[in-house]
Every structure is written in structure tokens, then in C-alpha cells.
Image 1 (cartoon, helix red, strand yellow):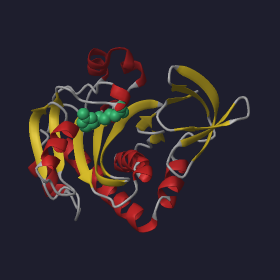
Image 2: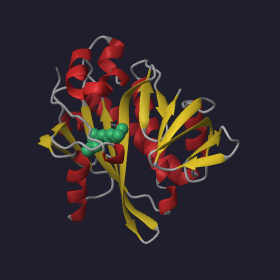
Image 3: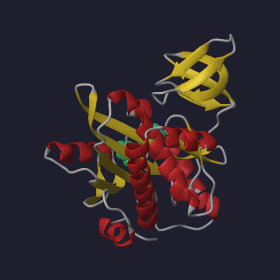
Length: 263
Ligand code: BTN
């Protein structure tokens, strides 16, 4: 199976802003953490960190992200959009759309699940972890961490992910053959760049429109937030990228940090 490496990504990628610098390590604690360290020493916008395996991969809401060697994609990229902190949430949506765009090259139709998941056949194939560095009420830089289940097979998922394996899938599982992770990394970064530049030029409307067409809006959802479960219908995204849910008692909830499960 093809090894992940920065030179191979650079050979196939077509970008002008992202991935001008690509750091590859066989193993890191977390590519997000490694990129945050590089930022402190002045890394430019577009710098990418990739690793074959992570010792302490991070998922959303403090969960671990299991990162076994040799099979999956773990990469982080930094962008520096001149936007208020209140709009930063859109970059998580942009990240999940870029992954779905890249997966479409393999003829699979992925869906996005608020705020950061990418699903295939209702199972999780990828996730995005955005981490912000702020200056006052503005974004200084934003690290987008992307993890995709690429060549891991069913027995690997059962072994690595434990209980979560039942809700997970991979590109290998969908296609029945392995793919080159360097090419997938390039396609993700190209789509991320396109969507980043589109956001800067045209604002959130195109993101919201495309996100809507690939999401579970209109479906019944359960929201877990602050230890409480509530149910309702996911109806929209608001101006800050929060999920708008019409609850069963008729009230409206704007979900910023909770976990949302379509039923
Ligand atoms: C989630 O779905 O909870 C987000 C998962 C994000 C995982 C990626 S793997 C590369 C980057 N480095 C990390 O430590 N996390 C992200």
C-alpha cells in the first residue's frame, strides 16, 4: 500500500495558497498540536502537517481520535481568514464539505452531519477538528484538523475503535480496494482552498446552501447537550453556523456545542 508522504502530495496537488509547505512525520502526538507549535514559530497560512499515525489524536468534545498506522489520513492545515470569531464555526462546515467533495472523486456520495462529521451510508467516515487562535474578537489563525478513515478494513475498525466501530466506515469498505492517501490528501486540500477563497469572496451563503443540500436538515434529531437529551426537527443553520432545531414543545434551539444524532 502507498506510503503517506509530503513529497507525493506536492507532486499531485494543484493549489496556490494551501500546502505550499507540507510537513510529514511518521508519528506525532497530534497533527493539530504539531501545527500549533509550528505556528508559534511563525508558520505561514497554508502550512500542512500530515502524519501516518498519532499517539494522541484529538476528536471533538475532548474525545480521542484513534489513528492506527498505515491506513488513514491525518492532516492539519492553517488558514488565516480576516473574520470575526463568531464566523469561525463556518470553517468546520467548510472542512466537512471539502472532505465530501474529495470523496466524490471516488464516486461515493458522502453526507455532512452538523457540525463536523462526514457520513457514508449513515456511518462516520471522517471528522474535522477546528482549533482557533484569536486576537480580540477576530480570528488570528485557524487550524483545521482532518481525519479520514481511508484504507482501514472492518476488522481493523473493530479492533481500533471498540464500540464506535459499529457507527464507523471507511473508503476501503465502500470501494472494496485501497486508495492512495496522498492523492486523497491533495483532493481534500484543493477543495478546502476553493471553499476558503469562496467564503472570503462571497461570505457564508454558498457554504450554507451547499451544506443544506448534503445534510440531514428536515430529519428528526436527538441533541445531547450539558447532560440533557432533547428531540426535535433540524430545520436550518443560523448566521453563526449553529444548528437550528424546532423542539417538540414548539420552541427553537440554536445548538452551538452539543452532539446531534439524526434518528
Ligand atoms: C471528530 O470527528 O471528532 C474530529 C476528528 C478530527 C481528527 C483529526 S486527525 C488530524 C487532526 N489531528 C488531531 O489530533 N485531530 C484531527
